[in-house]
Length: 263
Image 1: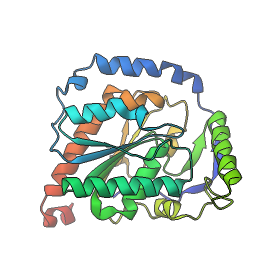
Image 2 (image 1 turned 120 degrees about the vertical axis):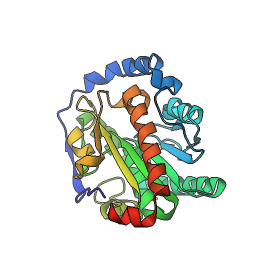
Image 3 (image 1 turned 180 degrees about the vertical axis):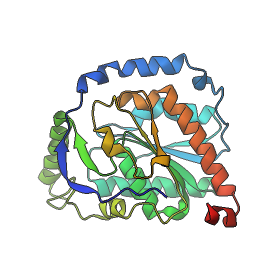
Image 4 (image 1 turned 30 degrees about the vertical axis):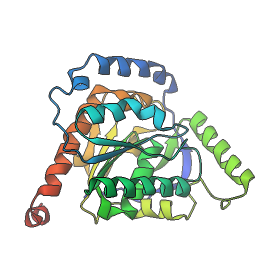
């Protein structure tokens, strides 16, 4: 299983080219002209549940393209139902956990989580807390070892933290790496001890976060794509990877227990 290392609590500024995100529309156009969009050359789904989790400041609307594609591919796709991802990490994790429980109950089988950016952190956190219900976790441009982002993104995060403090409902260190909530403690734990297939998708052209923070120590779980950060939500290379990794997770779940232990 992939090791994530200790999560760095201090948020750091990254010298990444934010201007590249202006080209995220090209990722979307590439998807529309790709055979992957029509399901060609990608394994069909088995009807299992796949939850898509939006990134920082985004809502489920940002992942509708991916949601619809998963449905066409034969999966039962779910929105995260966490609202806009700009609030207490633990609170959003609890909401996502409720959706995981619902999907698990409705399909009668383990679910898959796909998280974009901050949504990937939420996905990993909830997977650790509800490991008996989760088959795989796929992250797209999502930090593993700490927050290292463009200064504008860090400023937006600080604005969210101030808003949370103004409301006076959370601890003083809420929405920081120093928070000791259940959600962040679960990130420290990692998914090493569970039979959960992990996938970390990253891009060296990421203009929002430092790609070096978006990979596992286990290189076999890391997959590089040519994409912007925002564009990972609708990039044909990402979609092909998702299809293949979901299929691998299905085969892993059906593999005899003795073979899993040997692997």
